[in-house]
Image 1: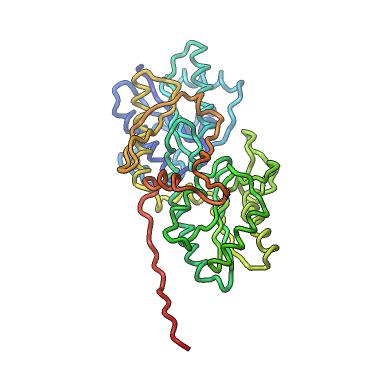
Image 2 (image 1 turned 90 degrees about the vertical axis):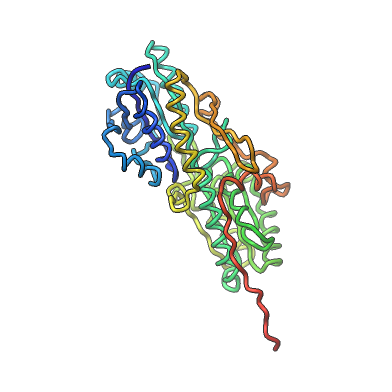
Length: 400
């Protein structure tokens, strides 16, 4: 349908979210059926205030540069859409003759598109709404993985590998190191750190994900066994870690606008700190803790080339779908081969994704619940790129 298009970015950024934005802009500007491409400044919240950017007036150098720029260039928002907002949104869509509606985001974002598109159709206004997946958590249904996840996974994998070398060499000072990843409902990012491991003694030794309850006694038993065997222990914990009774290890009680538990700031930091305290009090040993929070969302220097290309392709595919008359879908990535890695774009209904989080399958976590399986490693290996190898001294000691 002839008309204008609008694109917005929602929720937390990724290292490659602007690559998806560039894909939308490039595909839309090259179409004869789209006159103007608007950008929402600060998501749906900015859209309702008519804070629109004419993206067609940006220089080609800027659009190209988006593909190597971190964070959310348009500005993001975590605004929870209310029913009373829908008439206002429809009014603005009509005012600017917008017929193609794109949002780049996670499951809450897919719910926003779904509700806007459904309301417009009920009101007799033809609108094509397509979602473009984005989240470092990798917890969206219907897609093999989400753009942004491979780069964040690589960030965490490299961080654990390098901090593991440090912890190994400092074991006479600190006996353990705890690395906390983000991941509210799913442990994909924590699990990805397993690829840092080449030898049995390499970091990480223990990985704890929210898909399995955290058992304090078993944890202490496993951690002490590692310290006995290797002289130190590397532990990775997900921010969403829960005890058997469902209470968070972070001990946080705050929630966001979507009623999701807030693990950021001091609430999130207390996951790593609480696990650190548990181990320190039980053993008397010193230890380090590392909490990256949002750094893996914006580390363009560690972005995976595959991730950047797939993110860009998702943006272009969304426009092609909309121009073909498709609506109410999210673009998906469907893996067709693992060795060598091949994938193609597909689609899933927005209702399949909205307000749901995809946990890791049971087959990816070992029976003890303290590490991942080889199946997870095979799934992850094509996504994170080359895994570095750090040398170890042979340590030929001189005879006394």
